Image 1: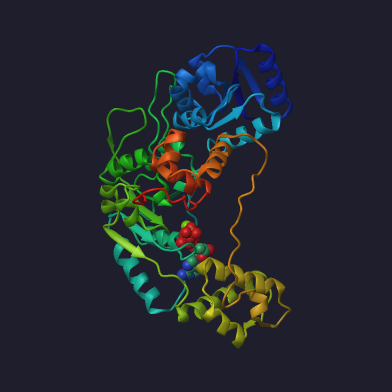
Image 2: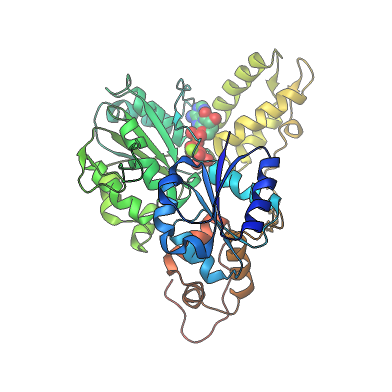
Length: 438
Ligand SMILES: Nc1ncnc2c1ncn2[C@@H]1O[C@H](COP(=O)(O)OP(=O)(O)OP(=O)(O)O)[C@@H](O)[C@H]1O
Ligand SMILES: [Mg+2]
């Protein structure tokens, strides 16, 4: 059962919140004062800001913390996140808001690292794929870091598995972490582990240590926060330093990193450490988009079709000539993943023994423009991220990025990172005076 600790010196409010959460099936304990010793027993802490603001850093280190404020502000919410809070809600907080925040906050403490399963066969008979297979066979047995670049769905994860399988580490674990899915304030302890503190008797093992002797695959490496980049550089050099620990210890892990972003450009703009980039970039595999790989489109399409027919027990389906032509023309923004989905869809919808047509594949040679997706608020909760999104949207047309970041009390870099994470791409700022350099 999820254990929640509520810290609030307002007894009425505290007992009301506690009983609401108990009704939701949570195990709740209450404190009217901050007592650090008892915190690590909780899966999440719900605390009123004035009670813990001074100690937020250490509190948030011990358990995911949701801050409640009777006087909420954008600036305070940003400061709270920077100090490690997982969420920030205005008081009074409804029990549904609180429950949603608790679910988000505890999602990571129960998350298991992804240990890769059986490698999938890498399909494709183009020259590009042949070269790729040869390079994987050569790169595999070395212990050097590998950087894999390529659009979404081009097979970066598949290649990472292939490298591990071709290495002398294949008997040891391959552990995968998608850097974009872990909140920035948790990623360092997740990756590098947490030292034992006065209040925490047990040190925790990070994924680096868990992958010892094997391979650690860091997907979406461009999303790794700066402080974690520094620690990762040490790991690439053979040393791991846990959060809260003074000295580093030797570690034997091979790092494979992947991203669909232009990592070189990110080092030039200062978003990604260049020393780390150069260490990761020793061996670089750039995966080509599916569009234009004519041989692969048909070859992979037919192989996937045969496989899907077998799996769904629908024998005898074939690709029609006109469907093949459209497949060759289509731009496949989702690459092999999209091809695989299109085939699966067609197999499900096709009659037994039919010829697969373009309409069954549901692809168009020139697909219509995607409408600018307005991001709909999922619910009415006043979370930290909502404050941020609303503030940015309300002000971005009036302020430059530098002014916006200053108003939020964060760096331009953090503003940029959060825009990426929360999917609020930059709109054009009104031209006022000289253009900004980026
Ligand atoms: N050459 C290939 N042969 C067979 N299957 C492939 C190939 N390339 C990709 N796939 C399949 O396409 C899907 C997407 O591949 P993968 O997850 O490796 O892509 P990715 O580059 O990591 O994408 P993303 O950036 O979105 O994470 C997977 O199901 C994978 O098995
Ligand atoms: Mg991937």
